[in-house]
Length: 271
Image (cartoon, rainbow, N blue to C red):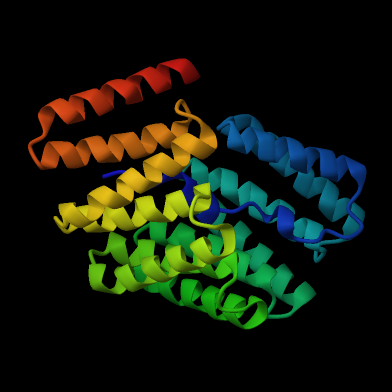
């Protein structure tokens, strides 16, 4: 079963949003290079650049500066992508501690750190550790940003995904629906962000065998992405793949074959 890849990037957001006052141009350049390497999955090189960025941040700003928190988070992100969770965890924890000290315990930057640490725990199937972190992040963002902020929608989606991973579908569904409603209100009904949430809710229904409810959500997600991103975008391929699986589960083999052919063609273009 495919979760939307866009969700993973939102869940493990890089802390470029952290205000790193006083960070020098060398650190800025290293951080930008790291983000590019991460996005292109060049993780071995990203580790080298991340360690250098952390070294520069600590040397230029001291060990408790927001730039250090950013560098710690970004290096932890790379380790997480490599599934080196034992290396990532202490970096995320130190980043969180610095951010709480620099901005206070109820700042949205703290919520970002909490989400990243929670995602790591979720990926390790440590759900009892992940849940309170996700819940605290949600509470911080709701109080600081308002109940209809996009960051709140992200928090809701993260929490829903964790419950879904545990087959707690009844707990996940209202969170996904609220997240979708916020995205529609903020971005409009035809935005790619909305397509992501539609896809995720459809996956939830599909996991429960609620195929008739999943199908129109996939199709709407697909239509939005094709219009906004173009017919050959990787996110279009992801939705097509999910829809093809739904067709196979409902014994529509010819339809599934046609969709899978499109997926193959799209991915061949991107190679």
